[in-house]
Structures are given as structure tokens and as C-alpha cells.
Length: 65
Image (tube, rainbow, N blue to C red):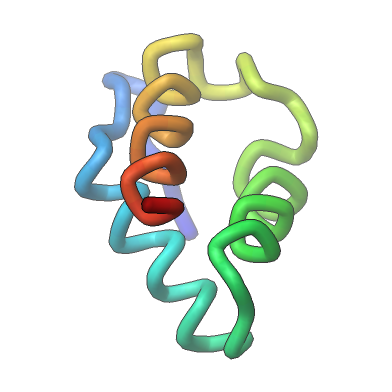
């Protein structure tokens, strides 16, 4: 996936991204979170800025409900 570093990605983007991982890998939201941290963020919360990571966390919490 190509990501433009010009701006923060939104919560809706990450809701879709996490759902895609869950559907493709037939896994839980917690497993999808771990996959996204490895593949998307490469283990670095600040890789795309704090705002983007906060939106990711918000999406994760929304799906965890």
C-alpha cells in the first residue's frame, strides 16, 4: 500500500484497513491490530505522525466495541 506522507490518515481509513485485514486473514480485531502495527507502522507509532496513529487507535477502539 502506498501512503502519502502529506497528511494524517483518518479513522474511517483505518476502520476499512482493519476490516480488510480481518476479512483477508479471518482474524480478530486484536490480531488485525498486531498485523497493522507490523506491516503498516513497522512497529513505529510515529512513522506517519502522532495524529495518524491516534486515528488508527480510534478505529481500533471503534471496532473493539
